[in-house]
Length: 248
Figure 1 (cartoon, rainbow, N blue to C red):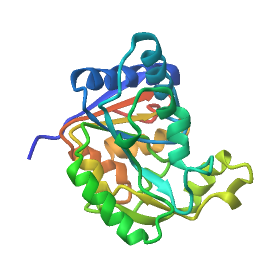
Figure 2: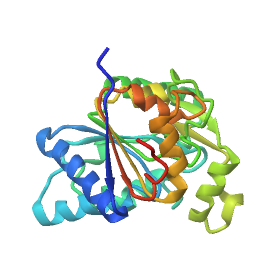
Figure 3: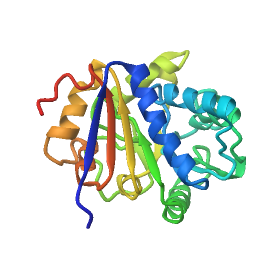
Figure 4: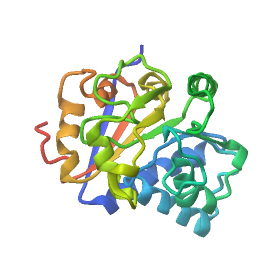
């Protein structure tokens, strides 16, 4: 087993975090034209995606042979919902670059049989090992929708979302928390850890406790992100506020 290795890069603010994450992502795309990118949603990666779009338009960086796999999707939402993650990814990235739609992969939140969908997505991930998996981190240390207590050997699964996670995401829904789905389908922690490299980005003081637990706490299922301490190639890019509780 390869030796664990985490590189922590601290920047002043969100803009600098996004710029540094873009440099990392562009290097992968340029060095491997058919790279498999594991992607994430939420507010944190939007700055990165904007820079990828800008670079594509200004410099012609191509994604036509790139393949993508996304972390998760809300159960019950599909492309027709502007709160679904498939909609988010097209609106914030895919519709603005030259990626082939057939190379885009997300779990299907509207599958008739969600157990079979979990099996399908896990099989796909086994065949499509991520060259990099992009992650954010929840205030409670979750990665993807793998909430505290999720087994480290989990694969794609259906998760009942914690109230804190639903509250954190309610700002994206016009009707507030009542519109936030109660369940999601997510890559398991084992699927995340199978990636060749992991890029985690975070900003803001509200992420400081989770960042401290991830980097300086014990490896525990109570902080799902702490498992990253055992991965051989992790880059963590955070701003001063998110790093504010680190002691090392």
